[in-house]
Length: 256
Image (tube, rainbow, N blue to C red; front, side):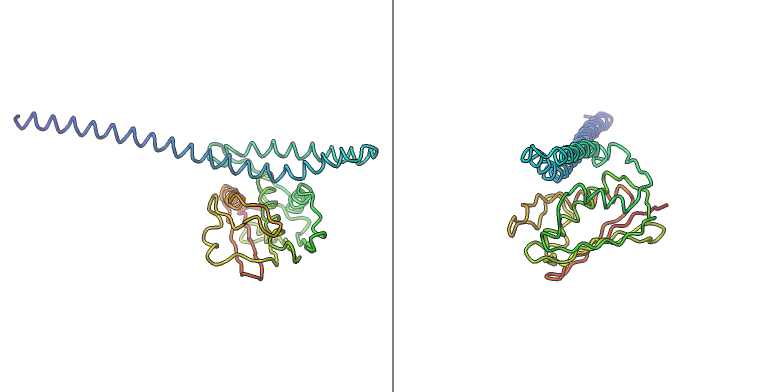
């Protein structure tokens, strides 16, 4: 084989390797996209599960007291509202998977918090938890209210579970910060260990073992929260100490 033939043979081999690399890159990109969609579906399923508990409670309330027409109407309206919220959350899948732009509107932060507590339908006083809300009435921010409502629900439920059995104080504060908005959610619960702290935002990592009245964790709630804040161009940070409590700080970059 002369030099020219050797060069041609080498060129053909290089072209073959190049095509194979391109095919592998395309397959890898498809797998990454499927992985993102799978994680998005898992996160959304977790959020819908958060709504199923109060929805079921309202439906049972309507069935148990068939003589109280006013109570039945109230319970059914709540159940329908929660069903609508579940349908809204399903629309978050392409957003979380990076396939669709998130839509944002100017929204009242106080109304957002009221929406969250109304959706949870829990009486924190029965758990010995004092809830303190410190949010200016005129404070608004540019946000996706559906995603941000679920963020608050996740963080508030986590705070509640951290204080189950001993009670405590749950405080939600909001204030302008760096031309944006900060929301602080603090509890006086069990806290997070230093070993767990670097991993709490990782998908499928959980600190909940199902003991002491806790739900068994799936490790998707905080991953969902972090993703929603990142989609807003914001941040989610945490400070915690064992036996003393935890503070989550949300920052959104734009407010009215």
